[in-house]
Image (tube, rainbow, N blue to C red; front, side, top):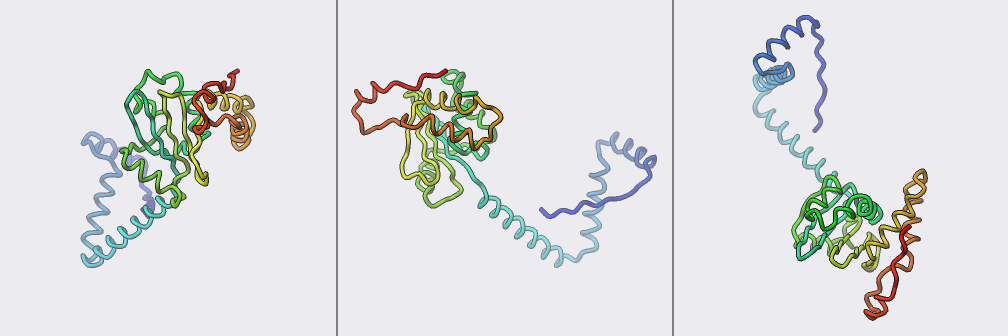
Length: 227
């Protein structure tokens, strides 16, 4: 909203006396001035002009909302555990590494202890969605640059499946391997986040679970040993 700050200079002693009385009445100087402005505006500006202005304001607000939505970048996330599912979107933590970092440092110790919606609080501000919306967003990712990553945590299997923007296929890793990869990336706390992400990716090289392999081959692949 294109609001403009209006400054009014008033003697500090007069202002203090006025503020004291208004406070006793449960009112504020800002509230009184705003009401005065609104009443003056309504009495002086013709109704037809006010309607034009309100229409313009609505158009500007709608445009700003569209632009904000177009600039938005978010991950689409699914938690599964013991027959329960929770789906949500996250703008703040919206890539594989940031989600993996949260898992190692916050979610891992509470896994199986907290409900899935409580675990999602570690992502900060997030938007719960239903399973149908999750499926729609997954299908839309290829043509929607706003969606940066799809992430599915399966706490029963101890795995995470990920598909980031531009990836041709899903990748699945053991959560233990992902946690260890974060540990390796975070050992040097002073390096840039981009460098940490490269270390993280390198630590997961060849750790992807190959679902086309036999169950026996998969079972004999040892997880990365955490330090």
